[in-house]
Length: 100
Image (cartoon, rainbow, N blue to C red; front, side, top):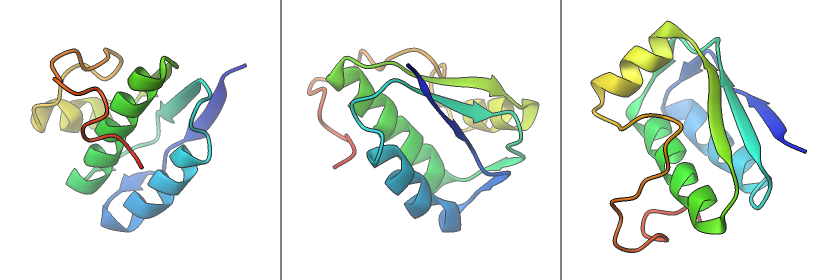
């Protein structure tokens, strides 16, 4: 069973720590992140999401971000991040940058 997390409208520095805590509480479980209401994605939350993606991939568990608002998708791409639902395959160490 996939757990769902609805992301906040504004993912700024104030949302980073609560997002990290919410993700860590679900570590080891398949998770779907609903980004349909996200209007603003800040750098710290982007880092939390990228780290979660690496952590879930290293654990062999699915983490998907769907649906995505246009604002979320545009800002994700503007930061230069790779596709949201593709595991990071370029990392030498799958745990490097992982949530801890």
